[in-house]
Length: 326
Image (cartoon, rainbow, N blue to C red; front, side):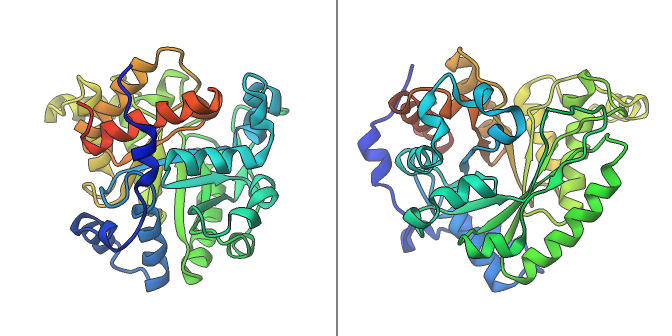
């Protein structure tokens, strides 16, 4: 496994030198936003190992709520402690750490100002895993401000029969967040009775989900890596007629990014369930990089590994995005 030196990785810090022309270019895409929101976006882009590159690696730990504590943390028991994840994100040099209200409240004070925080403002549990999911609204903009966050996070499920309710909730929350200078990060995960299981990661559906999130005012959009499958018959005709390149993963990443305002919104890709084959994950990162994606938001594949292993694993991904590893 190709890795980079841990010590040199954590030495990279945000500062004036991280406010690069690339960061300025990205901020220029958000023309309607106030200085507070742009400053918080800048904090995301100028923190950690990838500071100034325009790439992001974010550690999300909402899986305890979403999947249950044992399924999330039993494989690496230190993960039951919320502070463990703050430290992991800091020591790995992540751009930000994202979590639900309780996990952030448990350790935000001792790490105040050390790393940009994203408060996950809605969550869904599996104790009643309905065909058409509808997350509960579990935190507020006021909570995010109180905890010193740079952004709120919100999940929508395009394809659910309740998607319109989520869109309306997101629109209202995004308006409030932006009025207080917070950025908006949207988990846009196609799911529900309107889609087949294969359709949840179909290229046409994932690109559509990214576009919906952008239309609803997201600054940063999180989607799953798309497959070559096309779910919608009418979309399949267009893809064929226009000869849209989707044969490789980097092609598909490029198409999803294009769907988010021709690449003028930050699109990052989820890591999904833990994979034992790390080289496969590194190859995915290469495809994201080569397809013009902005990085990864990678949870279980990070915190379900022992800490030192996880840090080296994350540094390798960061090295790929930084162009230090081919």
